[in-house]
Length: 60
Image (cartoon, rainbow, N blue to C red; front, side, top):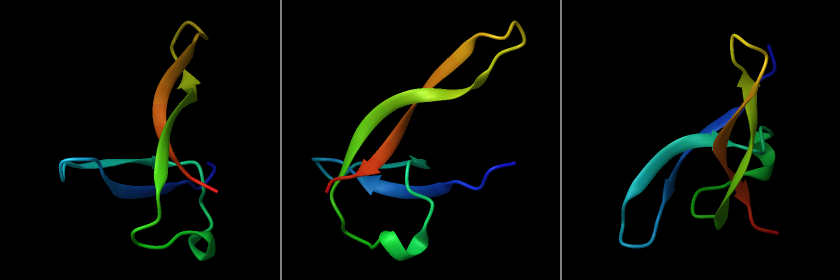
């Protein structure tokens, strides 16, 4: 098991989405920081194929 961050990200228009974060160090995250959505492998399915999901990544 590898720890991962989860957070609520507010999108334009005020909609909030819960999702995994690419950053898991709480010291590098803060409320209100800008994020972008990225797509990356999440896990393998029963046949060994990569399952792609969305993640939120802090903007530098």
